[in-house]
Image (cartoon, rainbow, N blue to C red; front, side, top):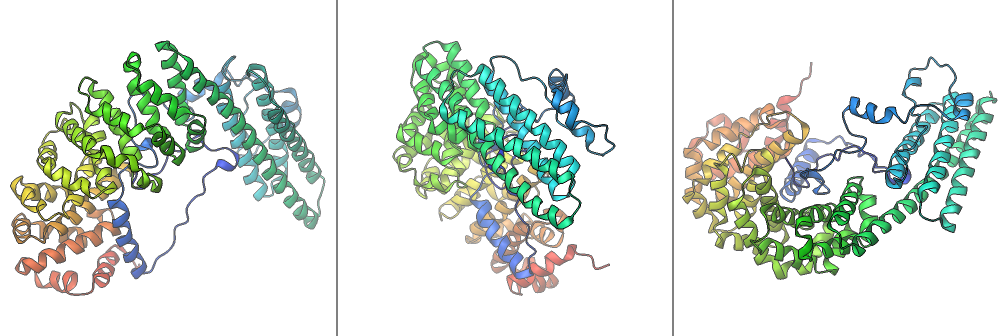
Length: 579
């Protein structure tokens, strides 16, 4: 099941970062009570502007998407690599593989062969992953002053770099002066690293070693930079070849294969998506989507476009080629299969994601927004599966952030009835990720005064009450986070709708206040989420203002009467132990 982008889910580890492309880990800051309350209030705003999943439709696992090269079952990965681990280069055997009792000696990465003849892309990706892993590990050993390991790994790194250069030269179409220069610089730095680490083995003076450590660190950094530049240049050449092939091909099978290769590259991370966008990948894919002879390839092309548009360059290229108009044409054309329209909805969800600040300037979207919103509501209503409904509702949820007129359009199109009816259909709405989209739309629409009457008419308060009890099935971090968002947004929706006394009375009749109190007082019920706590306190105070008789004195004195921050501190401290 796909999960829409956003809401802070961690991106999967992969081989998408080499050299300077690595990710930096965020630091967690300890907060005072006031800071945590402020952060929780801010998190509500962030979550209300987000959808589960992240940076790229990355978070919506696409049908038929192949598993990440290096993120497969361990046995399967071993089987794939077994043929490559036949025998080391002689130098590596003689200098870098002594009999060792070190605990990490068995984890060395040794690839003697390449991914296969005539496959430069896979060669670059696999060798790139191995070399970037070695660079990272050398840095770790250097920080621990384990000079014997640093030297042996430096020698092995040189072997891997030499293998990559020679193997790619053997299968590449042509060589350029820039690439030859980078190859030369890379090998020179590898030799320099091996030589300086070997000298460090002979030094016993700590002060001298300290100065040499700085030299090794600088050499390692320069080597990583040269490697990143060389790999980016080589991948750029391969992407250019794929784009040219798509543009020149009239053969459906050739185009299908080439588009599949392009999609596989997008799964390697944002750097490759930027390369594809800069080298004309978006233009080529929309060319495919505008040819009737390639209609059966539309889903694959649209899926690739959704991945590319996680980066700013992709969205800019989409706007340049009137991509929004093309998406609107596909969505409104009932002759296209449901799968094609669902993939078009996925692209819309990506380019309107509130997580991406550059999508907010997509001026061409406003011109086609009414057509797109109408088509998406129809797709939600007619969806034959949870996958299709998820993609269409995710696009609608993002559009409600994109422009305020979207909420009025949805109200006129009876979107509340369509969405609430879908909630009772387990075939369409069967995961917390889908309910997250629905409650996001309801929360954004609830700012409209006329929304309350529609909610009452469709028994929407009871549905919102049920969302306050959302529980994960599997217990995975992603699903737990989705449930938190559902609870938080349900509380926000209830607080906004309770401006209408009729809604507030209906909420009290359905025992919403009891559930809100339980969420405030029991950290386990809200997974210790500060954002859910603040949202529930706000909703409880709104209901108490209309129907104070529904509260016990202790609840009123602790959860309603004090300042919000004081109630927040009281409830958040219930989980702490001072034993």
